[in-house]
Length: 433
Ligand code: DLL
Image (cartoon, rainbow, N blue to C red; front, side):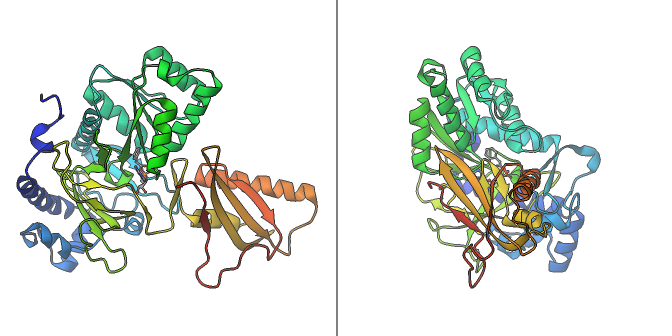
């Protein structure tokens, strides 16, 4: 094995060969997808077969797949393989209505683990490393995704799971952890706990951090690197495309290589749905190229980014995408959890004591993200302090059950929140971006 690459023949493949491989895999994907109830019907309506795709540009003949369609076909309408070959199911962290479900065969899990191993190898991890995963396990793909990828690499893998910072630090110290996976907001929290405990992270063996699953700036990355004395690499992925291991920074730390042998990347204008020129920001649209059980075609991720033009000095030929710049829908991510304002609204409308105007404010306090939900009271509310406090606690509890994090709820007088004339502005993001 070449010391620089996990799979040299794929990572530095010529663009021409890569495109040949993509075309071949794309046609196979269409064949497979046509076994799913959803795509079978769709292809019939549009008269599509694998022969419709002669060049990669022909991909544009195909309609997009959206999150809404994934929900409508819940749970198995997009499954193209035989369910007896299904070995794992994940669902997305957003919980509006039906969750989006992804079903994997053993081939899919092997392909995913291989991609994560490729990413970790790219930033210098080897079988001698100790990899600690502070991600939530369970449905969230950051847990099992990194677990299997790091095991595939042969690293000693510590499934520490989320939270309990003192225990994380004890593991780092006692087990000689060299690499840690954390969402960026948690990495900063952990650095603070290091300080509180009087332990200098530079005295541990920790040298590499893998950060992702939520938007963060280069400044935040530098802060993490400086506080923990590590190199931090950005990692992008989503449940619909496996999870982590979709795009990852190399040692250059200048954009994330997108594994184009497994995903076909398009960047479109979210309004016109036409491709944007290379280098311009648009919405990322992805097609799986190596998925057996549940291929997804032209999936609208709603993530806004751009392709970084030019070649990467590391030699890898797979395109690089820039940091995620935002979303083309109203989803926001806080503490690694994806939330839609509708989820908050759904809870608030159930309380007759509340009016219909509310505002979600996202702020940063001591490097920790905070979510504040201000909601106006209705005429039906009491002005008894104890009753109001009980109401506030009940709203907080129900919101926590729905969105999995605990917001700060503030009940405010009717008419005191800004009234917008057009589309209501429900989210104010004041975080340091
Ligand atoms: O967040 C998968 C993942 C786990 C990626 C661990 C990286 C590390 P979901 O919960 O489905 O999956 O959320 C996917 O998170 O569409 C983006 O909006 C956002 N996101 C993921 N990675 C990044 C990143 C996982 N590096 C959604 N920067 C995506 C900014 C990110 N946003």
